[in-house]
Length: 138
Ligand code: CO
Image (cartoon, rainbow, N blue to C red; front, side):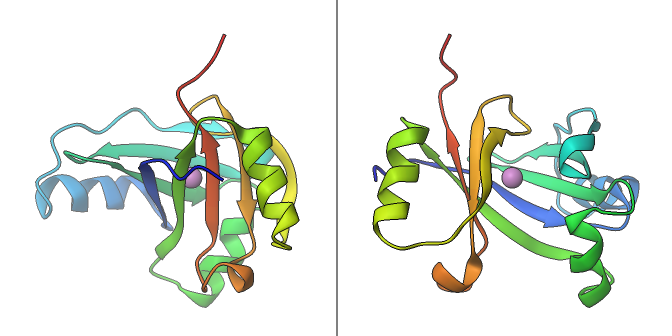
């Protein structure tokens, strides 16, 4: 496992519009990207730039959204996951498997268009952890 940069912090929200207003007006965010749907992951996503990372706002999309369960427990939303970059997603996955960490589902294409997988928070010090390949390769 080769640990790379913190790519983003995932934050669940019942309303991307309300969260964008918060990040702009209260936190001083200047660059907010257009929101887009990721139906296969049951979320609508909106990235907010900070000087050294991004906030990934996640709003439920559809009835089976994994974010919906999170919002039942945390109605106003909250910190959902951390996403770290790795140079080789297959090597990282193999390393976590060897370490006995539970991987949640298959490697899939994430919100940045590169392969990602998630690790169970109970095996990761309580933190739902996303591992994403970066930079994109052809
Ligand atoms: Co993420």
